[in-house]
Length: 509
Ligand code: ZN
Image (cartoon, rainbow, N blue to C red; front, side, top):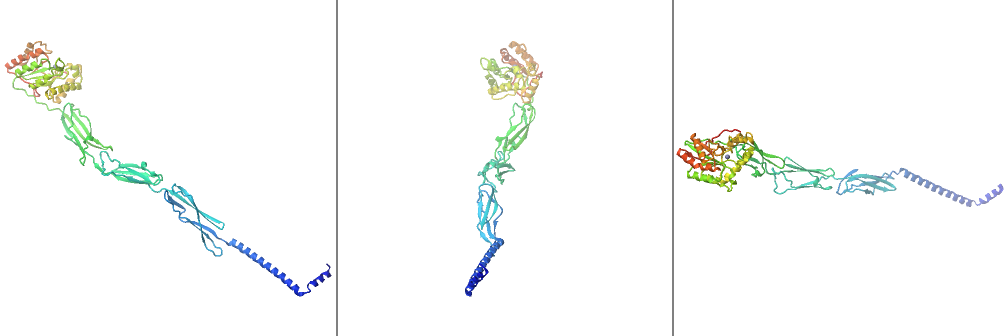
C-alpha cells in the first residue's frame, strides 16, 4: 500500500473515537495481567529457592545409654534405645520427634560383640547411629560344699572329702575343674569359668581323732637278760579322746636277744598325710644273773648219763630208785630211733627226781658245731622235747664232746668259746665232768672197769661230776656197784642244778 492508502485506512479506523479507545484499554489490561503473573511466578521461584537455601532442618539421632553396652550372657538385654528428632528452623518451626528404627543382631545366649543400628528417615533425609553391645559372662561359678552330719576328720586318715560341686550359669557343671588344696586344717576350693571368673570357698576341718601318744610298757629304757628270743613288753597308742590306735603301730629296729649290747626300737604310727607319731625305746641286753655255785659240805657224787635215753635207761632208773639216788640225764633226741621210742624215759627220769639237761637233739658234731645258729636250732629243738616230757625247759646242758672238745674245730673255728659265752649270758649252765668212767673213749669195756674208774676218780674229790653213758649197757650195769661203793664211803648221790659245781675243763676251740 502506498502512503496515501495507508493514511486513508488510518483515518477510517479511528474515525469512531470511542471504539478505538476501548480496544486500547483491553490491550493494556492484558498486558498488566501478564506482568503480574510473571511477578508472582518470579516471586514463587525466589521464595522456593530461598526456602531451599535457608532450610537447615536435619535429623538428629542420639543414643540413650552408653555407646558400648555390656550384657550378661543368658540374661535378657534391655536396649536403652535411641531418640531422633527433625531439628533446625524452617520458618520458625522447632524440633519434631521422629520414629526410630532399630536393627539389632544381639544374641544374649552367645558371648560376643554385637551392633545395634538405630536409624530414622524423613523427607528423604536419613540418619543412623550404632551401639556396640558386648555379651559377656561376668557371673562367677557357685561352689556348693556338702557336709555329712556328724563327720569328723581324724589325725590318722586325715580329712575325707565330704563332697562338693561347682556350677556356672554359662559353663554349666564345673565340678571337675575345681582345684582343691588342704593346708592348716583348711580345705580350699577354687574354680574359674571359661570367662575367667573365679570363685574361692574354704572349709575348716574339724577333727575327731587327734595325734596319738605312744606309751611304752616297760619304759623307754629297757634292760633285758640275754635270751633266745626277745618279747616286747608292749605298747599302746591312745589319742586325746581315748581312741585306741595301737593296731596301727609299726615297730622297727632289731634286738638280737642273745647278743649283749644296746638296741633301738621305734614305734611309729604314720597317718595318711605322712605325719608320724613316734616313740623310741632302747633295749639293753645284759647277761642273765649267774646262779652262785654252792659246794655241798657232804661228799657228793653227781652221776651224769649222756646220749640217752635208750634201751638201758629204764633199768638204770630202777636201780637209782632202789638206792634212792638222784642223777642227771643229758639227753638227746636219739631215743626216738631205736626199735622202740625211749623218749618217754626223759619224762620218767624227771618224775623220779632226776635232773634233765640238754645234750643237743642230734649229737651230730658236724651239725651242731656248724655254726652258732645251727647249735641254737638243735639245742632249742631238744628243749622242746624236754618241755613235752617234763613241762619245763631246762637251764642245764652239756656240750657234745664236752666244752673242751677239739672236734668242733673241724666245723667252725672258735665256736666253743662263742657258744659258751652266749649260753652262759643266757643263763644256761653247762657241765663238764671231773670223773670219767671211761665208758666211751676211755677204753672201759666192762662194768667192772667202769665202776673202778668211777671209784678211783671219786676218791680224789669231795664233789664229783661223773661222766657215764646210759646207752651203754655195761656202764648202766656198773651203777649198782658204784652206788653201793659210794654209800659205803660216805657219798651222797645228787642231781645237778644251776648252783652245782660245773667241773669245767677249759675251752680249746
Ligand atoms: Zn655225748
